[in-house]
Length: 185
Image 1 (cartoon, rainbow, N blue to C red):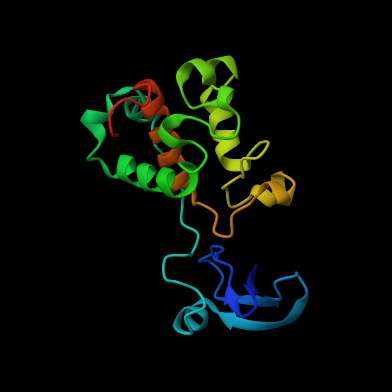
Image 2 (cartoon, rainbow, N blue to C red):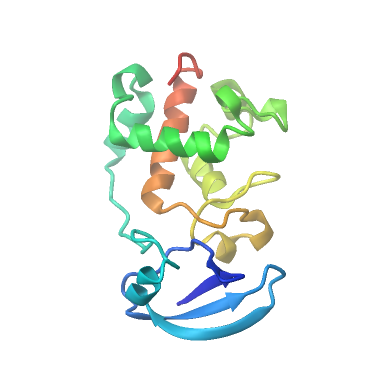
């Protein structure tokens, strides 16, 4: 596995925990490879170039009944659950700039309200998952494997979201859509 350094600072890509030693590639801001070196994950972490917790972690298997409960229970009843809080934090940080209060500031007809989602084919949960993971149009993809599945220019984030966070984000968005984005969420 390779870990990229941009002008000496780590691009915050997860480091596979299974690899005791990784190749670190130092890359300039314009993409020029400046060099490579071998480092263990613990060496990188102790040097401050990789934060603790950036290692890949297993994806929790959440039963479909639980996913439906998360999506369909009124937000006032689930707002204190950890998945909801994480989903909300990620939504505010990554999505609210273009989707304030469930709207869409780029293309108004592509909001996160159920009427628009249904009309645009996103009543299917699998399509919601795909757009969050790999992006579409002006929306970037947030999955760790985005650049392997989609044109890398569609993957506009330095630090991809882990699978658990993507699940929490999907469930948060669908929960709020079911509430028609009413209330503070």
